[in-house]
Image (cartoon, rainbow, N blue to C red):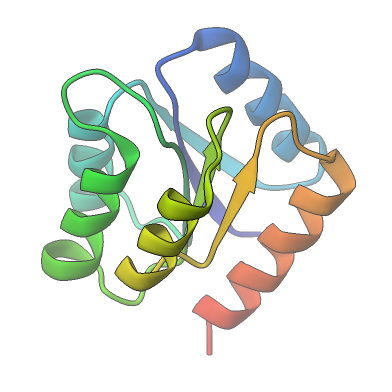
Length: 123
């Protein structure tokens, strides 16, 4: 099964999503910042990144830029945010995000998007 990197500065969110994916057979790596996520991508072979948008120091948009321009251009990235806006959704898509979802999210919907992203990423 696929390995997912979850990036969020809120521990409760990380553990909820981690448990959800592990219960569905995914391997999960967690990072609490954009910087940790970059290190994880460098050392772990991950199939997908799911990142929060708002985080201290390096936000999800900057993480997306680094991943797509420098580290892993073909790696699918899903953006999650409690602060959704049309502007950030458009920017995320332009930078190469697989999709952009608002929190709170529908669990079945997120699982479906992850399945699609992993399938697309493995082509």
